[in-house]
Every structure is written in C-alpha cells, then in structure tokens.
Amino acid sequence: MSPLPDHDAAAAARIGAAWRALAAIADPELPALTLEDLGIVRFVRLRSDGVLCAGLSPTYSGCPASAHILELAQRALREADVGPCAVSQTLAPPWSSDWITSEGRRKLAQYGIVPPERVPSHPGRPAARALWALAESAPAACPRCGALQTEQLSEFGSTPCKALHRCLACLEPFERFKCI
Amino acid sequence: MSAHRYVLRLGDLALVLGQRLSEWVGHGPALEEDLGLANIALDLIGQARLLLAHAGEIEGRGRSEDDIAFLREQGEYLNPNLVEQPNGDFGETIVRQVLIDAFQLELYDRLRSSADAHLGAIADKALKETRYHLRYSAGWLVRLGDGTAESHARVQASLERLWPYTVELFEEDALDREMAERGIAPALAQVRTGWTSQIGEILAEATLARPADRPYSWFGKRGEHSEHLGYLLAEMQHLQRSHPGARW
Image (cartoon, one colour):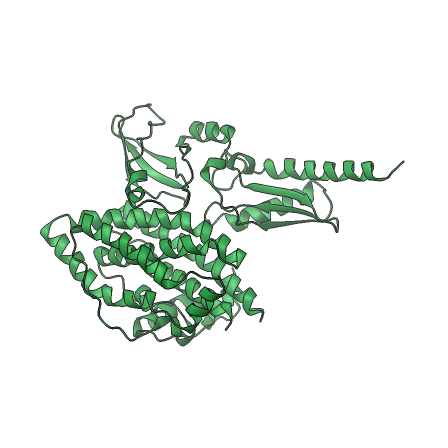
C-alpha cells in the first residue's frame, strides 16, 4: 500500500551491493587482503538526494596507496551498478590496526606477515614511560619457524604499516604489522 | 585573522621537515635507518597534504594543496626555522627530529579537541604516527647520547646548535592567541609544559645536558627564514616552476 517498504528494500539492496563490491577489493600493497579484512571501509550510506556515499579510512596520512584505493573503490561501485555514488576519504575516527578482522589476521599470518597485537588504544596522553613501553612489547613469533627468539631490526619497514624483524633461530628477516 | 594562516604553519612545518628528511633516502647509515627516516618523511608529507588542502579550503580562493606547496615563495612559508636547518650528520638529524616530534606530539594531542573538527581529525590521525616517530628518534638519541664518548660529544654539540631554534616554537603571537581564544588551537604555554617534561625525560635518559635558553629573533612562522629554506624550495619546486602545470 505504501511505497516506502519498496523504497527501503531498494535502498538496502544498493547499500548491500556496494558493501559487497567494496569489501572484495584487494589491497594494492597486500593483495592477499581485502579492504574489508583491513577494516578500512568505514561506511556506506544513502544520502537524501539518492547518492550512495562510501567512506574509506586511510591507514597512514602518507600512505601512497590511498589515492589508488579510492580509484579502485569508485571503479568497483560503477561495475556493481549501484547507481549514483561518491567515494571519499574519512579521517575520523582514525584507523586502528585493531580494526583488522580475524580473517584479515589469519590471511596476514598466512602471507608471512606477523599480525598486529591487539593493544588497548592509547587513551588520552601517553604516560612518559609509554614512550619506551611499546618498543619492549613481546617478541613476535617467527612466521617461518615459529621460534620466539626474534628481534626488531627497525620500527619501519617496506610500507608505512609494517616494521622489520629478524628471527634469531632461522636467521630469516620478516615483517610485522605495526600497532597503531 | 583567518585560521588558514595557522593551518599553513602546521602544514609548512610538516612539509619542510618531510622534504629535509627525504634527503636521507639512499644515504642512511644503514638500510634500516634509511627506511626509518623515509617512512617518517612519508608520514610528514601525508600530514602536510591534509593540512595544506585544509588551509586552502579555509582560505576559499580555490588553491589546492599542490598550488600551496609548489607555488609560494620563501617569504610565504610559515614553518619554524628549526625544520629548515640542514640535516648535518645522522646525530644532528636525530636531535632535530626529537625536538620536533615531541612538539608535534604535544600539539596534535591538544588539537584533537579543536573547534575546527576537520583540523581535529587530522591531528588525531597524525598523533598516532607521531608517537612512532618520537619512539624512533628518542630511541636513537638515547643510544647516541649514552653511547661512546664520540657519539655523546657530537649529539651534545648538535643539541647546543639547534636548541636556540626551539624558542620560536613557543613564542606566542597575535595569531596564536586568537586561535587559542577561538578554541581552534591550544595555548602554546600548555604545549611548552608538555614538551619540556617530555624532552627533559629523554635528555636525562640520553645523558645529555639541556642547553640554556637564549634569545632568538627570527620567526619562520611570520615568513622570516634562514637562507637554507631557499635552497630546499628551489629543489622541491623545480619541476612545477620549470614546467608549470606539469602532471604525472
């Protein structure tokens, strides 16, 4: 009787299709993971003028893949035929490595990258000692041989989101996702 | 006064320091340090892009982040003089980095509650990155300061050389006061209190002596710069100046 339920159903279908399209995009730098795995699809909503708006969180301010990811998202939405849409970067709340899904963590480990520890986000100002505390967090288990005798070589790795470690048992270097 | 000049100060600080640090690419003392400094540079340039784009929006004259970065003269740059200082040796780069990382940490932390919500969001994002930067730079300062007699003497000398430039970071002018009154920025006195305690702790751990404050009369945030900035901009802006409008 009322046209509203149909309208709602159509809107829900568009939003659902857009989510599925965005979620399935492979990250350009970590192709084993999707945008959903990384937890960077922030929202998909329908604006009152009928434009479907999607917001993506950048992992780091300077992540060189951010612009490319926005392009991939626009293309995916066009191909999913969800009607008029707009993709934008959304800064708040800032992305946290805690948003990487369990599936994402499993895939990272399988890919040979140690997943980030789930750390309580740093509320408020860090205590002065907290400056050093994170660097002393538990050593990562080597993704190749499983040994716990590993050390951090550098806080920074081949991409902004990873740190470089080394296994002292099998001597292989490996990467660990940074906790932010 | 327009808030865009205040946001430009923050953006220029990040951009000039990011450009300086990127000079280390391919020249780091070890591959890990090369990567470390390059990653910090990348974060800073990312922060600069967000800040300069925001400044352009507030200004409302249609200038993009690239117009602002590549088409301004030295006197229009509003970064503090500290970040345009040459890299020196690795130790001097680390000293400069500690001084600025601690400043950005204290500033961004307080900017998160800015009356300008977008500026607050940029600060919230950048704060997480800055914690990493400070842990890296402070970690190295401790190793160098509390290292050999040679490394200690060299970073202490760098600290003496760079310390006078830190005065400018906390020198409040009319724009700073207006931003604080409007709730856009924190009072610089608060930032200084946090910075002083953070730096005090790091210097103590690094067995370095805190130099005495000396008067300083150049103000990069008003567009008065050392000659070093001109060379940096000449390199950074070369492509856009020689081939206006060139795109990838």
